[in-house]
Length: 103
Image (cartoon, rainbow, N blue to C red; front, side):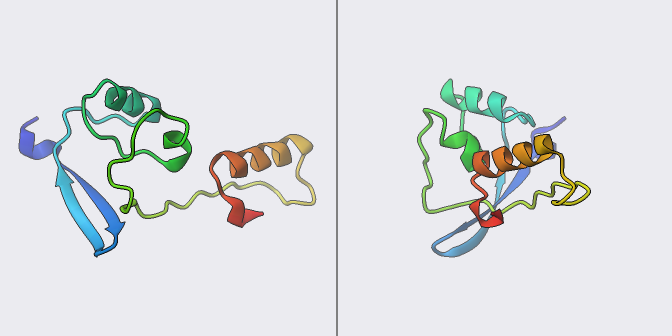
């Protein structure tokens, strides 16, 4: 694959509005733990969700910029009929992903 074919787009929102930035990463992975490790080793920047970044030793380099929110859906039969394990998992997920608006 050529350098031109590996480009990615980061859509960031900040004080001056939205920016579309094309980057050409040396590594592209879909595992947040690996991205964090690569950044901790000094191999570049990582675009990580808050729930991963807040537990890391990484330093946020663009604190005024963020990635647009991503929708997450948890589908189950109903709140009334939800098994206690399902409810416990959803409560944990809400806490871990800092989704307080769902409570």
